[in-house]
Length: 258
Length: 349
Ligand SMILES: Nc1ncnc2c1ncn2[C@@H]1O[C@H](COP(=O)(O)OP(=O)(O)OP(=O)(O)O)[C@@H](O)[C@H]1O
Ligand SMILES: [Mg+2]
Image (cartoon, rainbow over all chains, first blue to last red):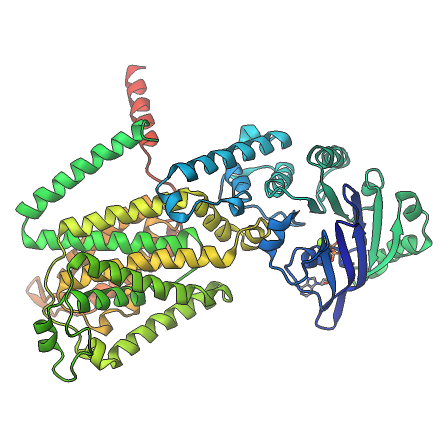
């Protein structure tokens, strides 16, 4: 059974159909890509999956449960984590605190127990800190734990966002253009990193990418979106030679920003 | 944590502080004691508003409303039945309030809890509004409280207010509560809950995507902030001995906002300093409202002049000191210790 399933999802903004009757399935452990030209509706699909937007029609299922009407924090707690296209860190908080926030929803100790630093809370706090530091180590940011997140260089901010998402202990990780603004070497390094965390944490990953070439190397399955519609789906090879895709990408240069 | 030196340093500082408070209560003259009481109340108000505005990033203008609830609720509980009968001569006070009298401390607590309840009612719908709109909604709430209290003759005595309240508020009560407020809110914002609040301030969408329940945490900030505002209202009522609905107007809220802005949105240390500063300044500025003689020319005292000066300070601080006295820095024993270590090594080398 698919771990994530979008069933005929449509999302409109006024007259604009941003996502048009999209169906999509992710298998457990898959590293899948979602590509398409500017304004194709990729980010909107993430926002529908994570509960930021309610679709106008269609349903989203996660491990068989209907999550279409759930709130973003409930969906995060169920096991879907994300990063953002335009990085959204807690910029005035420390690197460590950014990650610890993502552990907070699991906290069982009450507000009073936290204020009084009772043993129950103190233990949970220690666990959250340890888990967060381990994650920072995994992404190579441990030595910057006490820096303010806003002061990190761009590439580190992207990695911190991934570490923060991992702290929710997700089953699915949604990455929105993680390589944006990186040079080819950094991008290649990042793609290896993504593959590594998929294996290490047993994740299912859906990756948005703008540039088709980037995902060809690592994704096992690619879905191509154009004007809100799925125009192709398959292995990188199949996508590469698909005439529809070539047309959309060539055409996008002309139409996308008009 | 009990083995850390900072714990013992804090304990010693508190003992010294309360020894001073105890000395002040018995030896200082009434005028100075009054200013010190006001300072403590401003500290409670500033720190509790900073929790909502500074740490959670929800710009609220509702503090005067929460104070009014705390002030009235506690006064109606600790006043004696005879005193109530004397106050409510137009319309009698409703049963059972006209019969009961309870001690100051539980009365304060109930006032605080009722204010916290109002904080929940304001905080909950505020999920839907943000930024400027939130400021307007919370201001609207505080105006509704004022209008309501002006008209609930048989509960609040309407615009006549309550007079001759017994003065229970002393330095022990006011600074005791101020220290407790600072302790509670500091510990709250340093905890995992506090991190969730700061995350909402920094980026609401990301916070929600990381599993932070916005409704729960925004209401938490409002409930805790409103509770302490209610306590401060109760302390203030018993200090000034007279309360009326119009005392809890928008100017009062502005004054608290000024304390927070001056101290630094997101700095408890700064808020404590600016709370004390404003209390002293407010008294000192009374001079400008009394008639003065300069070079033989008599300048009549203009009432409201203080508020004008205050507004100017508010504007200047917003325009030029965006981050207040301390920005979002905090006092810490580590900071003090390393400061002295540095000085020593400078002298040595
Ligand atoms: N909140 C919104 N309100 C109105 N229109 C929106 C909103 N969000 C997205 N859109 C529109 O929906 C369409 C799809 O946007 P989306 O952000 O999903 O595209 P995308 O594929 O992520 O593009 P990009 O590669 O530029 O990130 C665009 O035309 C966009 O302008
Ligand atoms: Mg996008």
